[in-house]
Length: 208
Image (cartoon, rainbow, N blue to C red):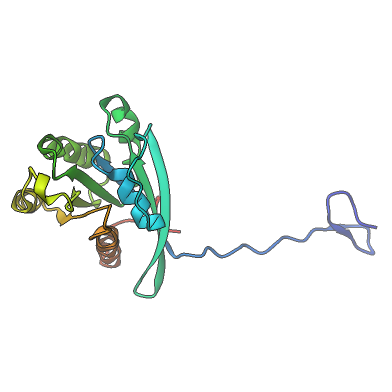
C-alpha cells in the first residue's frame, strides 16, 4: 500500500522513495545583460526588436526595470541572453545600479537625434565601471540611425568616444532592426571568447 508521501513500501516495511532525474537546462551558458542610457533613447525598443522581432512606436517609460531573453548559438553552444532594460530617469538610478552586479555585458545607449543623451554617456559609463565586474563587455549604441535628417551626433563622434574608452560601437535602428541583432550577438561572442581565454569569470552569475 502506498504511503501518503508518495513513496512505496518494501516487503521489509521500509519506505523507498523515488527521485525524479534532474532536468537538463536547454542552454550551456547564461549571460546577463543590462541596457542603460537616458530616458526615451530606445532601450525598450531595442530589447523588443531583439527578443520579439517587432517595433512598438509608442512605448511607456520604463519604471524600474523590464526583462527579456533570447537564446543564441555560439560555436555550437546554446547561450541564453538574460537582458535587463533599465529606467533612464534619475530617480531610478539607485535601482539601476543594483542590476550591474553579475552582468557580463552592457549596452550603453544614446539617441543620435538628441545630443544631450550622448553628453550623458560618460556618466552612464562611469556607473558601469564602478558597479559591475572588471570583465564586463560594453557596447556603445547610437540608436535611431533611421532618423538621419534629425541627427545631432555624428557617427565619428560615437566611434571616437568608443575608441577612447575601449568600447565596441554600433549605430542601430530599433525601427528598421538595423544592427540590433549584431549589437547583442557581437557582445555575446566577445564575452564567450574572453571566457574561453580565461579572461572572464562566468561562474558566479552567468554560467548555467
